[in-house]
Image 1 (cartoon, rainbow, N blue to C red):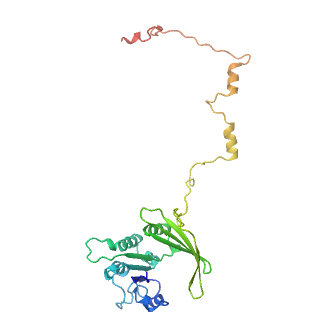
Image 2: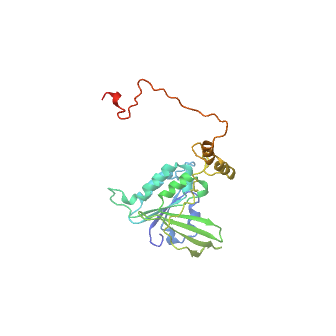
Image 3: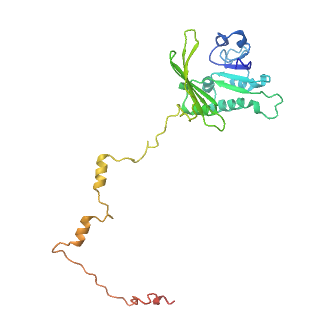
Length: 268
């Protein structure tokens, strides 16, 4: 973004402006517009140096202060904003910032607005992390140590499958970066490392699988409707001395015994 000459607005919440600009040359610093929320974010000193409107006021006024051309807004950091503001408010403001270039009726719209946010994942739960991840078009997850680090990049493009790649690098003693390799770009959707897989068999009131003892008991059980060989032998071979039964039937006066017309009593 610095090479293209675009203006960069930085919302600094975690480090001072002097510390942030340290290490950049004059050409880069001339492109930086630093909005200092680190020195007095809540205007406790009452010196008038605090930014009007607080963090939200600064975010909403950033694009209106810029001229035509691409603009990058860097938030250092989103974690600070989430600790002081509701997650829904932060997400709505970020969505509005990223759509500044498509506002109807704007006489001088900004050509392109890119929002870059730093987030400390260990400070937040899966809810805010998932919501912010859904808003992002590119998500970079850093891990590892200084000597062996990796950056996993997830790209989300409209009407396309997500793609991801991994870069390996190390940080030198002078804070330079030594790139060591990159994995090929893959188009398969990458599982979200922030959301653990959900096991649908947990917290059930019944067992889906039988133990060995339960399986043996199930196999040895004779169902009441099952006509086993034992039942067949008991019916065919009656034991000696067993009493036999007979059915005596005495026809009633209204019994219809005429097989030729069994419905003659219906008076049809």
